[in-house]
Image (cartoon, rainbow over all chains, first blue to last red; front, side, top):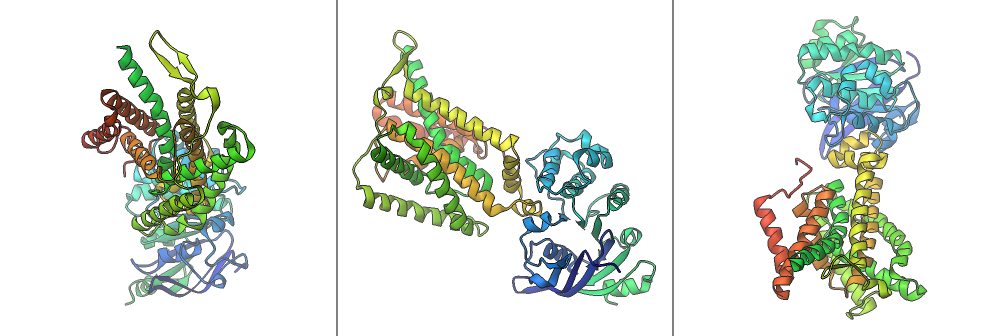
Length: 234
Length: 289
């Protein structure tokens, strides 16, 4: 594996007294697509929240291009090129679709993504650019949420449950955008409950269970039985 | 007939002052859901700062704004960053208690420093000059200036919120503070800027108040009440609504005073209660939450 873009060593995370992550080791190379799978409560979202700075972490446990970034505030992490597509989309409801995208651009990182480029990737957003996000369909909202993160021109895109609550045909459309994003050299982490979807798009897969990594490897290496065991613990 | 027009007109102009009291409160509540109980006392504090500047330098009250606005802007930034930010995200009670305490502290510090004597700023002949509109109808230049300033300030804040990058960040943080942080918005700095901006507007309101009427360290809470009423009548989160709320309050007080001088404040409160009963969300509610 090439030098890591992002790596975690023994990452632990807590919600108050409750420990949610028990020493997670994950490494992501530049341009690589990683899938994190696992059941509800496995710590997948917690992992992303720690990486993007919302949850406290020991500095040295998360390294971006070698420098310790654990516990750094989210606004500085996004400025380093790590962008989050949060679970539940969380678009800004009093901003228009285009203003939501501009919020991403306001981070001020240079890169391939601009409004024009994004509207070519998701043409429907160009049609609805002046609309309120709440008037969009679920799939369109998810496109806007992904677009908002892309507008920060990230080198690592963290996608938390982008397919949650969407129809299969809509999910297929969303994942169809992935190759164009990868083509820009962006590394991607997708957190998914849908194992098949995850195995299709990922270079490597990590399976989480109860705050620990129970399995990792390329989709080819892993058998169904191994994944089932790692996913459900049986 | 002329008397009726006169009453409404004077009331509407008075409403401009109330809108200026309320604009900062509206901005703060809109952006960070913070109810600032010390708002009225901060108005009075700004008036005393203007008094000190005027007495020390001999410049006019309006000119003193060149000093008072930056000073209040700085106080607002430090107050939010150093104190009020710590009270957010812990439920609705801590900000209320802390700003309530702040209100008492400001009142007593002013009492200690300036005594309970009534003060007033003098703007010379301009204070009483008027523009004749008809045989029995005239408006004062000074109330007119207050009203025009109120409209300009609210238009300015509106443009800032809806046309600039800073305004976009303000609205995003108001919608979802945590999600805004994912996109580089530094909440603590942004909230501090919002308070600084609110207190800059407060300075303008304060100087107008101090020229228009007497003030002493204890008049803050009544200004807070007018500001609250204007914000609620207009609808939470709407700046133009706040202007409308100020005007309605001003007209109601003016009409009440015309019937019987003792009814001035009562009429304002009654108008406020009527709006609250008939339109609990105010006349122009913006937010759906």
